[in-house]
Length: 231
Image (cartoon, rainbow, N blue to C red):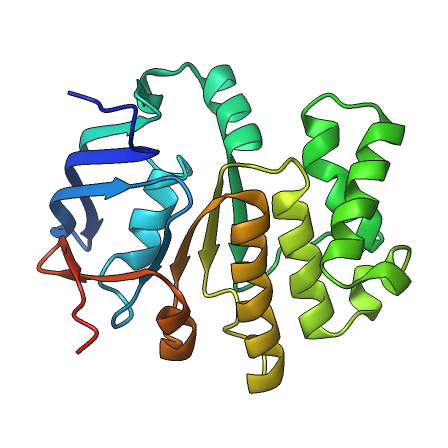
């Protein structure tokens, strides 16, 4: 039974893929609880299902079997319109490859989720400017994103993910393309925003320094999520 005290509950989750006619089980009987404000790092080798799991709890992909309840609601029972609205309002996404639109400025990219949400341009622009200033891009609001550094582009991607202040931020290798200094800056910013916005943060990462910032670390062994002992 779902428990609304948890932000997310995952029960008996399965996901497989077919490769050259062979079935590959990626996630098997996964059970996972995520609480409001928690910070979780999903670590481990490439190909074990980290990103797959992240995409499923963000409703970008569907499981083969199993249930995901978000604040007590089974989100995969939503119709496509309600699911898209949920994803827009409840989940922010940041990826290793930021997927910014190069023909638009930083503020125009950041406005996109608010415009999709139906906000008028003025309100969306005000919200975008506020979060861009917060992530340290006050002087870059109107710069085209292809003129920004890698670290600045990732900050724009983070601002875009947070412009609607979603309860959940999912980040897939958010510092994978950054040097050590810029990675550390993004690490610190993620934790600051986690506290400021009381948002829940789940990060897929190979960066153990970033993982150490999180309150909890998990990995995937034989298709199941397992907590990692910090030793």
